[in-house]
Image 1 (tube, one colour):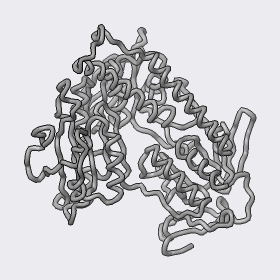
Image 2 (image 1 turned 180 degrees about the vertical axis):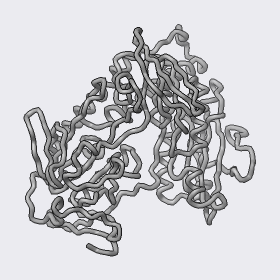
Image 3 (image 1 turned 90 degrees about the vertical axis):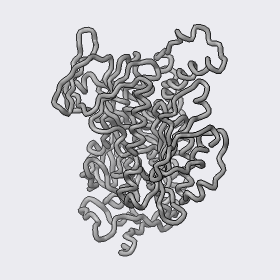
Length: 526
């Protein structure tokens, strides 16, 4: 081991590959009985065995076979308490990003029907336009099933073996799983844990029996009706947003703050914009129990921070109180893999066991985002089998919250920048703006807002960019590349915008919070 870099050198396919692990001073000791410190010369069924057929695991397996390795993927979906299950592809494809974005789009189209009238579109009987939940559900599920099928075909074409079974560790190189054909045992030179996570259920009477989660919502047979969403993270807010947009009564129960971990000024604007559209919020509240009534309605009891109790009836209780990594089910102790509160504290995707790696939502302190898992999986495969040394960079990863008005961000929040650099060492540029689309019909600009957090030194390196407005996700992607390239305010202000677009507002921002000047727009071209 190189004491300077904290690296192990393994031989793989005749090429030396470097895998960075924890430095020698804080390296976790692992029993030699559980782990072979050198794998050179050992024969295994596969070069890479992946546990989990989601985005990160599949990306790693496909990249590995492209580099000449022999790989297989174990994947099995345990049904939810109400029996929902799905196919190959993981959370994103089946019960996450993809169906969420499609339903978000469905809600936006409903709003567009109203907007169209102001542009001269004559829509007969527009006031009676109704949404058909069943038709939308079928379209969404048909798309998901097509992706499931394409994924299986792609694995076959890339010569990745797919094993439909729930794999657990027998030792650091051996996995066992029960399949339809019986018990299957395989060995792997390297093992990759990519099992992701599943929603948590609050420990209250009736939650598991009568509540649903995002694992169930997108394939729900019947329209959800009046819905209580418990949880104000991005999943809860996105679901409440599109449910409201589809015409359903939606209420969000907030334990503490909205969008914990995100910029809190932006979170407050998101709340205000959703309230303006009809979503209701219950602040400082916790659910206490759920009961099913004779008419199949759900009676939910909750209390606030003053100890007061309340009850109301709903058609659907959607639980969005967080997710847990699916590590406890893997028998990690048999391999010697250490976890921290269900998460794996890996260094450059390598666990404390040299031949066992992890990517995606199981990792401690890393962004729980599909593109992050995919990129990390590909880079890991290239290091293991392609003589690469390039490591995953988890800093400045852009993301978007797909609320009715989207919130896109990259880099530090204002709070995080103040904590890291001090309030006197940063500058916050901000502006309200009016998208051209908001002129006809006239819409309020109170919720269209952006800010750029920058260092005060030199050319003012950009530390974070945040924007709320239509198509925020599309905008922030391009600026994320600039931030990765050390964008400065000097460069941003010298960039010519595309007019009239929302993205150009970033190139025109020039008012600082410190100045106290009015950040509201004077005209469309100011």
